Image (cartoon, rainbow, N blue to C red):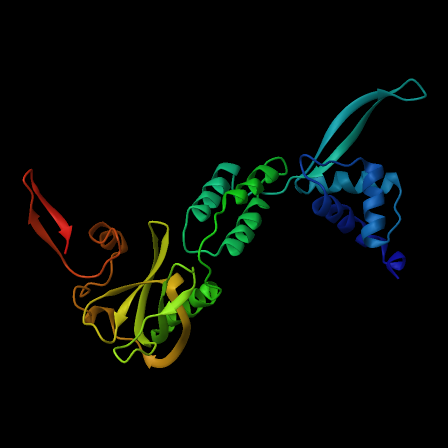
Length: 282
């Protein structure tokens, strides 16, 4: 059926074949482009058609690149040969930017090892052909860390709750020496259920946190997202952030990070040092 497609699609196929298969490090001659079009779309083209349509695509401004060579034909005449064609893909990030993103993931402590490696590999695929393998090797540095398989689901629910201004409920856990979750218990030694109005998500010190108001506290609380389990989006409206003690003007994440470098809750106050007055957490 593909062989019966109208010839007017030829120019589209001639563009898509290099776009799908070529890059700076992997180029094709016109005869090889003929093979690509036939393999992908079942349309048999001749060299004249390929040459004519490639010229039209270049004139139209498509990012097709090539090398130009000069040779003498059988009649002793000089002619130009255009070969080594490739599609110049737009690269949104340079390799150094991708490396920074990968390093940020590797040195984070909240992503499960398997998920971290998967994301690193996806980022590496955005790099140039020559750098891709080097970037991929970075995931060999991903170390074992405690696993919370609900991590991405938790982030999704929290993002939705913040957008809809709804409360969430969840179990809050601690890791033990067995690297497993153990829910925090109530006074009656049963797993406690937290009810929280979430406001902000932030990453600091290699951890990922949610800032919100716990129903059982008046001030802002911080929760490590990798310790949240069995989260549920409720129909209850969240408490307005401006009604929370210390957040009358909202939450300035930059300021919060300065005065809460370890993401502990509570107020800050000036304390006397033998050398100078400093602000410190209490």
